[in-house]
Amino acid sequence: MKKVCVVLGIVVLAVLLTCPAFAAMGQFVGNWKNMDPNTKGITALEIAMAGPKALSVHAWGECQPKDCDWGKVPGYPYAPNVSANLAATANAVSAIFRTGFSETIVVLHTNGAQLRADVFTRFTDNSNRSNYFAVYMFARSQGAPALSAPVQVSPPNGAMFSNFPRTTKLDWNQVPGAASYTVEIDCLSCCEVGKWCTDVGKTYKVVPNLHTTDYTFDFVGAQPGRWRVWAVGANNQQGPKSPWRNFRYTK
Image (tube, rainbow, N blue to C red; front, side, top):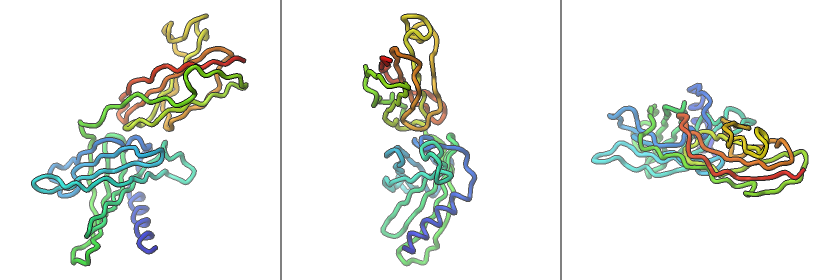
């Protein structure tokens, strides 16, 4: 229990050392390279989504003749308060790397373009070495994976609805590297009779900056509709759009 309290105390301290801006879980995702080519600490990080509220953190440390692989461990995101949406407002991530002689706690903050790592290393082998604290700055690596099109989950293509009000929930799977999502909703005969709005060069509804993998809205009328979604990266690059999925309200 004492060890757990010490770990939690260090993590909280690290979070308080900086005042990070809004981040969201997706902004941590990617390949990161230490901005100091002569660093003696962590040289590279690879961060990926591991679930709706979880990340994985893979680290490499300076070694000769090549960097040492520290392995992949769970990454735990933190929101600014207990009521905040974790996926949308995560502003810190912690990870713990253990060896036979040490324990290293890494606390990460990002503004999208750069990543700060506060690193606490504690030796567990009763050696005379001092525990130490270090700060490393990382930039996104050129090799960061490209965004993919989100896989739509529900409603199924061609779904028929008769409920009123016409409250509709859209769901899709998470995309690695996504900082947010944009949903586009189209409507038949809303812009021109018998045609989709996008077919006549118009837009019915586009909803950007979504930080969850779902969106709920009230549809306009008893008629066909369709929707698609795409991911947006930390540097505002857009990924490919999903196919259109059709649905229809009968009343």
